[in-house]
Image (cartoon, rainbow, N blue to C red):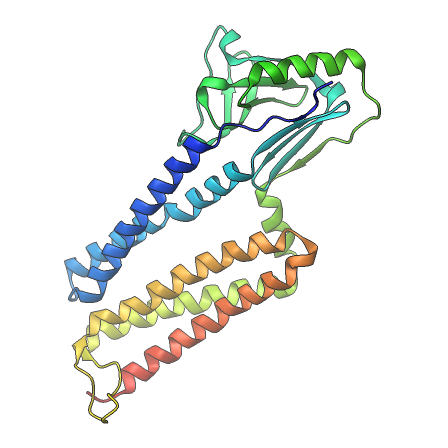
Length: 302
């Protein structure tokens, strides 16, 4: 019997996510460059908002792209497994009530929020099926898997082949009772938060970044110009508008967000948790270095 992997179509979704991330990165960089040149006032606020709103979706889109890249559906004689990023669902074959295409429904499914190609992820409530969870990539190849708990919506590249293989597997019967398992991305965050050292590193990095923003917002209106140090000859560098101090908290925050997400990725596996602590510790060190850099700039005479 042809049991094994039935991956979703990935190419189109990965291209779409890559293009969107690249475009947002360019906009965020544009806003960041203008932020370093803007004077105190509306221009500074506009540049800050552009940088923030362009960068904010990038981690989510990057995770969704990573989830699609690692996505897979696996069927054997005992269970059906769905792997979608950090989301893992193991369904014993005996718990599956039926499997059929979404086109068979009399009332069509509503797609989840932000239905990008390659990223149909989320839950919806259907009038006939109840709670429906999407872990799919292509709206044209949706396949429904019903259990007593909920209905899962997947999109293998070959839905008919998976449905036929499932029918044959159920006819042959299960060899051993599989254990049902549900793993969610939030589980990694919860498990990490239970560690005292992790809480300390997270909260320290958060307070350092909040302190940087508060300090910069208090200092910028009170001074007009700053200098970034001296040249090799000993003469001071050209003075710059004080508004450019906002670069420090913004850069520190962006690095902290990237480091926090990277640490969660490493924390999933026991053998890589040391890397997670190194990354989160680097977030704290980076925040301290930005604080010292601001102190050095403010105290350097112009």
